[in-house]
Image (cartoon, one colour):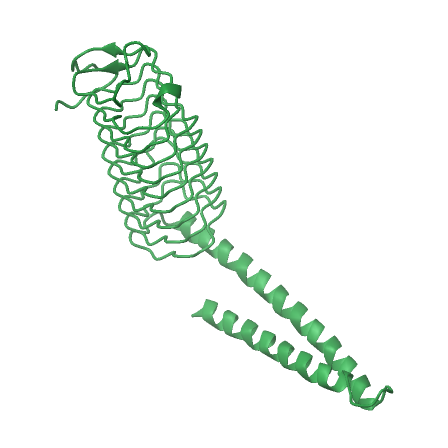
Length: 295
């Protein structure tokens, strides 16, 4: 309610300033060629409009800063914000560590540079949200979150959980997802160039129609992943590719498969020889370091 009153007062000032501009122009540009009292009054009104615009701008900035301070104070006092509606809100660079934001409404919210370490965003709605340069990490969970069309470029999310999350059409360029749990997630039509997925667990992830040029997926668990129409050209050294489908992948010949593990269920484009590219054939043998789900 307080936020609405402030916005209402700012809008009133803006409307008054616009009215002054219109009246000032009418009086400042009289029909006669010589300066007269009307034009002098018009000049004064234009000056008043400039002052009104300055006041409205200052009020807007002050209201925005006060809102951010109140949000940070609220997050500091209580960590339980399950289901909160923060759609389109400015949360950039706020400290949201240890907060429960499960099933929160964060569509089109601005979270760039925010600290989300140990935060719980399970099932949160983050469609078209901005999370560029956000800091996540161990125990940060976005399992089953909706991140469709979200911007996660340059995000630091190593050891985080994105299992069964929707990342379709998302931007993850240069994002760090080393050791992340992403099994069951969908990343269709996503921009994944130069992202890091070293030792990440990506069992059954759908990467169809995504761009992955320059991605580092060394030692990642990519069993049963879909790479249909993917622009690959990635680093797949020592990755587990058993059961993965590369049959329609593009530029696979520019990927490094040295030491990667494949089996009879791994699918390749016609004429492609994975063994000649450095891959090693091995059937399923679950280990402690790289847990493999039995097909």
